[in-house]
Length: 348
Image 1 (tube, one colour):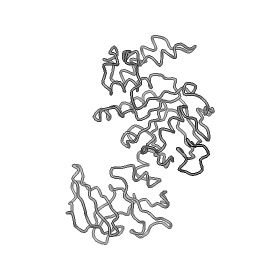
Image 2: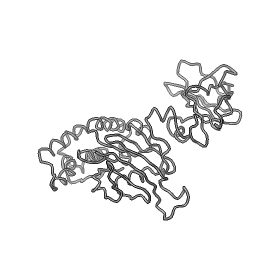
Image 3: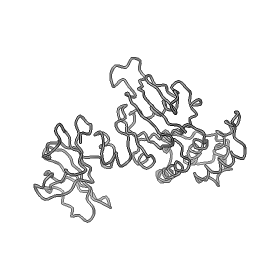
Image 4: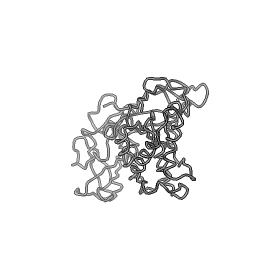
């Protein structure tokens, strides 16, 4: 395990001049020893590039990578002692489950600090138990379904105790949706038990928020916020975070619609969970016309339009009376959970 310090930028093109030329804009970031982190963002935001720089598959065009204070920018993944799990299973079909899980340890056995056969057996047994594969240890991998093969890949990444970090590049892509929740929970449990440094790349906010202690939200090559699930939901530091986190995302309105905005604020942001139906002309409320009311089961999702066609969504509990489509309503958008932004960044 290792503390990983990043101070870098990366461009695949020579002599980058504009922000658009960078795959990763300049960033400083630290992954603490034993922490669980997720790199979250849409396709093309730079998260896999960042992961590959950490692993040593890509060398940053600017800056440095340090493990426990030691410069490793020019070192290979093997020299960095990294384990990496990819989108699709990387296993040996001709081997059994046990042989696949043992393979990384057997490779290390050839060196001066090689593991004993008894240790390998115990370690493989423990990882198989964590992944609920104990009854399949003697089964050849070729006969397993894609999700079982990916569980073997996860196990191969986790089986070594001496790795600096385990990196996951969207490892649940091939997993059936009904099994994803189980594996996310299992990875969280494994992290608590093994205390490895884990970095997990995904575009799925549910995966990121349920797996990681700290989530790095990325867009257009920039890390715009690092924080817990609560931080990202309650106080998005950037309008992209407000939009990307949550279902639906944060509402954004001109700050002038509600009197009392901080000086310089241009945009008001409020989560649908904190928008309320109010009496006409109530303080912090805006008039709107209801355009849609969806019964989600545990709550109603209302969609309304302001006079300037700005769309506002609100989540109502089942106990509240639901207005009809076309009704004039007043929506409370100003409260303790309201955020204000200038140039897309949180002001207050």
